[in-house]
Image (cartoon, rainbow, N blue to C red; front, side, top):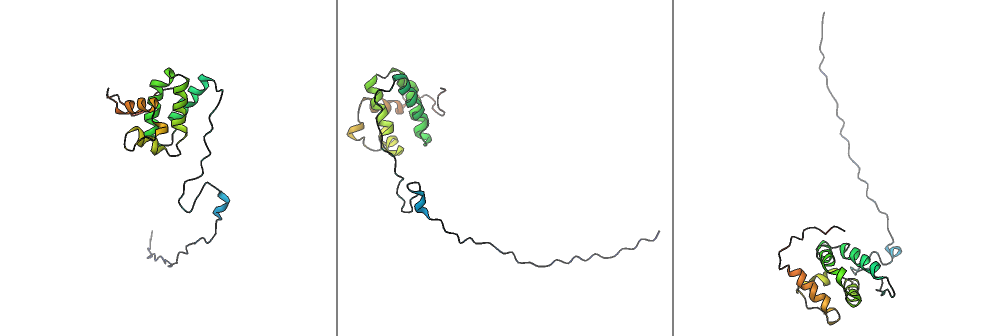
Length: 150
């Protein structure tokens, strides 16, 4: 058997890669208050107090709102606070807590006030804020690395 070998020469053709550059234009004014080129915060709807809301429904809503803050720090602090105090709050305290977590447009403000990084405005300086500040001091050194079970 006669085996002959031939050298294999591969030819590689050099090609240029064309890059696609999009020149499309998005008219951001169609997005309304969602996106602001100027860097302003989006327009947040005004807080409307719920009159005549069932107490159990209010506690359930406030528990949910305490957990779902969009900011992990406040989610942890407010959910553990709600778990500890919310069931014992009277109507007046529930109203104060509702206003505290729903009126400010910036969650960082709540965090700064509760941790005494910034002074608490007079409209939020009340017995519920005092309880929250005490809760945040965590004098019993409780582990608060996750939200409590529902």
